[in-house]
Length: 95
Image 1 (cartoon, rainbow, N blue to C red):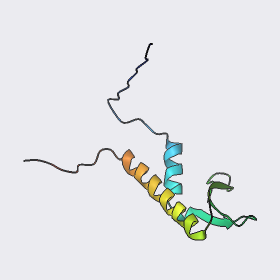
Image 2: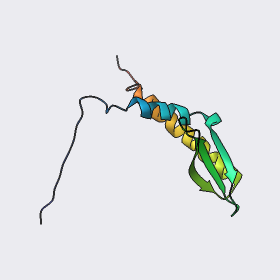
Image 3: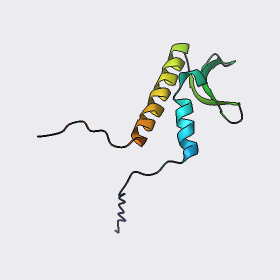
Image 4: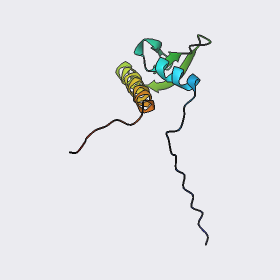
């Protein structure tokens, strides 16, 4: 039996395109989101596409509270991604 093993390393962080960064900045603001109720009673979270002004559906939840929590989690997720782009954060130094 043969196993294939591959590793990769970077000398710097992977670079994110400017378009992707703008999208992350946009969706990390809660004001760009909304919740709609579907005919089946579920609640759908959506963000507005900044270019086409169309609404992009993201998740569906059974309750409005669950939908709002999903938006909060998404905003937090994209905020963390933006923090990551700033580079490593020093958490402890030694003397």
